[in-house]
Each structure stands twice: as C-alpha cells, then as structure tokens.
Length: 221
Image 1 (cartoon, helix red, strand yellow):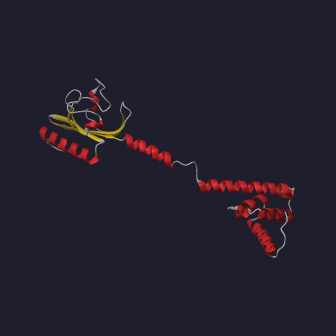
Image 2 (cartoon, rainbow, N blue to C red):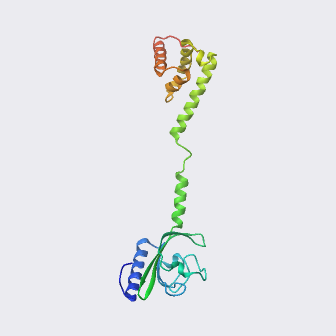
Image 3 (cartoon, rainbow, N blue to C red):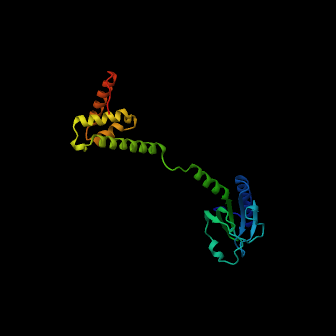
C-alpha cells in the first residue's frame, strides 16, 4: 500500500479495513491482520474467526497448524484470489496483502469459505445438464424414419434409382404421399436427393397427386 503511517496508525487502519470487509461480505468471510515480523506470523486482529477457528495470537495457517516452515515464502509477495483446500475438505478463496513500513510489516488476510457455493454450483450444473438438443434429435429421428420409408418404397418398386423411369419415381412419390412422409421437415429435399431429381420435380409430382385426389381418383400403392 502506498500509505505513509506510523506503526500504530497503520495497524488501526488495517483493523478497520478488515472489520469493514468482514461485515460487508458476511459470516463466511474471515478477515485478519498478521504481524509478519514475528515467528509464526501471529494474528493481531481477526473477524469472523469461526470460519477457520482461529483467534488473536494464533500462529496457525489457513491450512491448519502446519508447524515450522519457511516464512520467507510470505515475505513480500501478495497472494490474491487463491484457491485453498482446507484439511477438513472445505474450499476457500484467499488473499493476502503485505503492508510494509519503516518499523513494521503487517499482512491483511481475507478468506472466503465458498464450500456451499461450490456445492450449489455443482448441483445447478447437474440440474441444468442435458443429453442433447431436442429439436436436433427430433429432426434426426424424423430423417431416419423418412429414409426408412424411402428404402421400403425403393424395394417395393424393385429398381435401382439410376434405372428408374418417371413412372417408377412417381410411384414412390405416391407411396410416400399416402404415408404422409412429406409432413417431415426438409422431406422434399431428402426425397429429391435420393431419387436423383430436382426438388421442383418432387413438388410437381406432389401437385399432380393432389390434383388427382381432388378429382376423386384413387391413389394406388
């Protein structure tokens, strides 16, 4: 921090900041001030200490009482918005800010217990997960059904597509028409591709069948 204060004023300032942050973010947010000049970095002030179960004077780390370790790791580097998995399995977001002056070195710590948020996020993710797009699935199923109808009609005609004449293709269109195959989405394009004709031709055949039906002519097949 770029604030010039004596040791007592800086400590008072940090305590006030820590208390305000704890109030703002609620009981799952623990804030504390460490004395970084002393072994173990004892806590000088702590708010919402029930989050980690620590009190003023404690030298336990957020991970728990881990015993002796290289304290220079925390010497002058700030750690911001870091993930912490506690020994009891809880999940935290943790930040530590060093405040260094002529005769002091404090650290402002902020630890947010997000365990319940993570679980809620997982539940929401599970509840909102889907197996696929229903519209795409319906379209694919409809295409499969239509292609099966086409296959059956081609078998009924008894000729390969390349060998069919207009009467053969018309017969297939008639069979598909009777089965209401053209109610499927993109059915005309699929049938046209399978019969090696244009979509215009398929529409023309369908029109002829509709006209015949209006005249009361019987549709065979």
